[in-house]
Length: 163
Image (cartoon, rainbow, N blue to C red; front, side, top):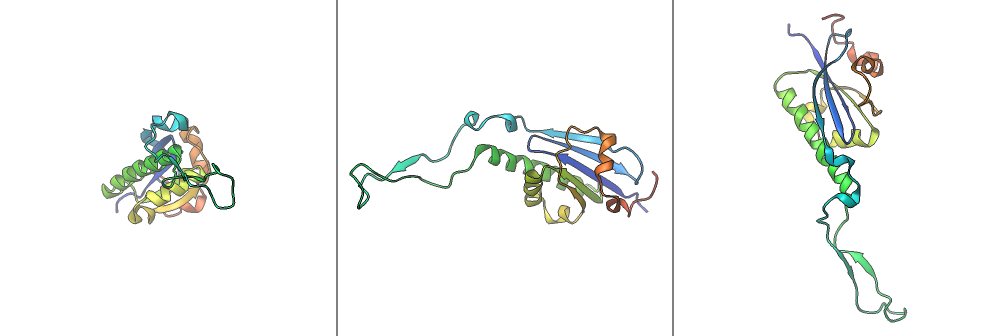
């Protein structure tokens, strides 16, 4: 029987670290990292391709002349949120590739709550089916040895005790 393995993904909107854990005991081993340098930019630093603003030139009935309505020409999206969505898709794509290659059977997601929602939305259903636990915390900068303490114990019950 093949050894059951767990992929632990620790992520926020700027970084994601992928760890492998063999068995219930041991330190997760870093497999790879993804980073998004654009995530640290301010909204003003993003090149905007958003539609401009328009104003209605006719006066609004019952209001003084020149009082016109201003509105956007389309739905506005914050550039940082859009960048986080793109990064979540990149993380999800990496997970899907690993799952298709048989690199893990179980998945533990550790991410800040907002990014965790983006990850859920971006993941393929086959990968979502592997999720055995979710931890709503940004633990990207935690050492690997400290990560296992955040994994709920029942998430690893299917695994053998040792390697």
